[in-house]
Length: 376
Image 1: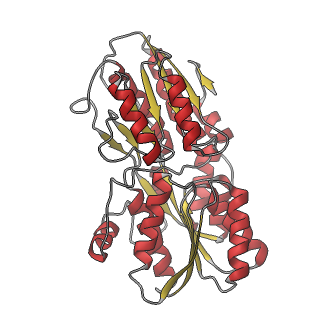
Image 2 (image 1 turned 90 degrees about the vertical axis):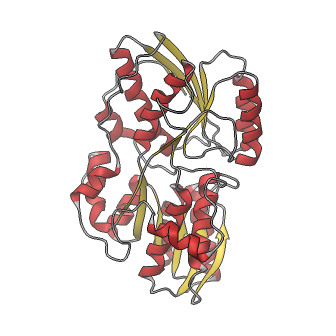
Image 3 (image 1 turned 120 degrees about the horizontal axis):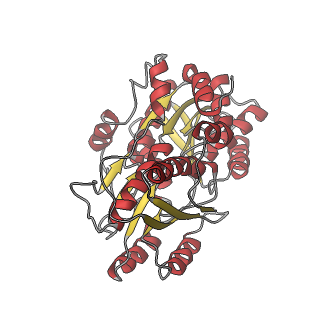
């Protein structure tokens, strides 16, 4: 997918194609290895209210994704920029990020500044594929190369080598590189461990701190998915009457998540709950438990339209919605500043954090209307 400047109706694009987000961050960025640290993470988890006492709020749903953005006062040094962005997998979550990019692009055009970029990813998550894409892009003369890291152990050394060769490299959207990587900046979710821990706490509270739980992770090695799963495991470990009966990787595929959930339910028909660590697996899990008549409680990530409908119907209990639009918008702004030779500091931070909002059944109808223009 190659994006050049075009004036887009953001509302039309949102109602036509925005789906869900599963942002990620380096597993080295947050390290929790004891119950006290897990508790600290939960007390600062990015959730709007106590997970045990969710309350209806139009403001909550309306604030989950912020479409009201304007470029800051920074004056770019050039009138044309060309970027390269690669991410984990072709998936509606990154389409939502792209909408924010397009809006920033349009606003730069209104100021007489042309921003063009390539926005490329494989059809199946692969760190080796991402490595090859980066190697192919390194000599193309891009002003900035941006990466949503597929596997921090494989990709971080590649980014270090590129920066060492004089290239301007940033990370964005869902997964940062490993701690200490030389990339210039990151724009995205910096709290995936807390998201996983917080969602799992919601589940634990709903189940009365007892029962059998499965975890659907996502892609092997993806920092965001692994961090959320780690937060889930650490939270469940605090409750002696709770047990993890299965941990499976669905590789960010709805169909695979569906198949894995059916497999888990066949082996554990009395399953009490499922923690879903990306955007695809809440949908696959909900399809499976609906088909098999299970009463397992699902918590998961993001705002896929089908997932929101399951939330509205009560099949899914809680979703953590990330602000993908803001990630895309600020990625373009940050890339322009990096292209001009700026380093993290006064003009932009090393890590620009974007929030996650926990929403419940009473928030679903408004969220569907806001994001898709539909009535639940």
